[in-house]
Length: 225
Ligand code: C5P
Image (cartoon, rainbow, N blue to C red; front, side):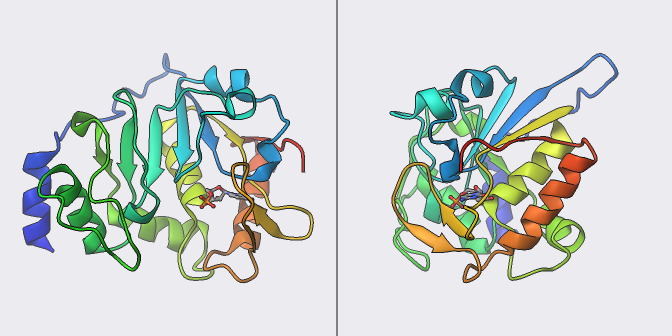
């Protein structure tokens, strides 16, 4: 593991991010999940109005601008969900395994890793100077303290939301939530999975998110379901 980390830091700039907190700063963030409740929402302009717009996994903007907006400041991915980015977007890797970090290095250098537990892109378009890697300890912290160790690991959206709570002053949440019958639908494709069978604790995550909303820590925009 330490060998991999030794390769990692020379490759990606080690800037201090987000250390400008203070009473004068109000950074607004939109965390955009991939729920089908975004369809028909007309949230696009509202989402784009935030300082940071964080999107997760493959959730596209092209063709869905009216409902999801077009700005992306942060794209949170793991290798299996990575997509090409434009030059201004931060690629934020949430590493779940050493191979995820090895893939990131490979994607920007040798391009030899094409397979993890499934096929992954050998390279991606992204600005190397904007790459960020979340410390794996943060995933552990979210799992232990926020997901209270429910199921196997927290979902990307849930991790992103907790991440946003730590770096933003105001967190607005879009595109979270299954249908009333527990179907985890996407705004951009037709695959439906029930979150009862997922590796994520969809139900528990939702309860936590609802509690954060009740405590006014976040503002949920529920769209149409
Ligand atoms: O499905 P995917 O993991 O790409 O979706 C990104 C995130 O959006 C999820 O991790 C989840 O937190 C959220 N989501 C949701 N309800 C859905 C679909 C996704 O809350 N129906």
